[in-house]
Length: 148
Ligand code: ATP
Ligand code: MG
Image (tube, rainbow, N blue to C red):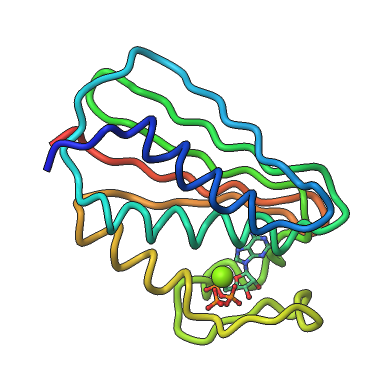
């Protein structure tokens, strides 16, 4: 279905921010010229909810996360950036497997299923997901989707 991507993203961010304690916020940046997008709104909501909640959860007491939505010529991308704990380099290969939990997040609750679901939903919708992460520096997840 055709979706209003910018307002959907803003709505998801606002809801996540309302759940945060300690007055944490998320900075939302828009790049490029807004275009019509055909996508499954519920899937996108689920994907972004998971990635944004991870960004907050694994960056407590650190600077606030950032989300950048970019309308490119042939696709749109969403970067979810945080300055938190990061994922240890030797565990990068395992992030999308079931029940994966980084050995640096033992004190933080989680089941290790969020990213597995996100990964499947992204693929199901013709998108791509990649990430860059460095321990104690932060993590950036990047989503890329075609317009149709
Ligand atoms: P849940 O199933 O409730 O989401 P979870 O957050 O542990 O639990 P995933 O979202 O699948 O599960 O993430 C898996 C693991 O990947 C996390 O436990 C954490 O080790 C690592 N991880 C994911 N996102 C981040 C992030 N933004 N910063 C640091 N580590 C992350
Ligand atoms: Mg999670």
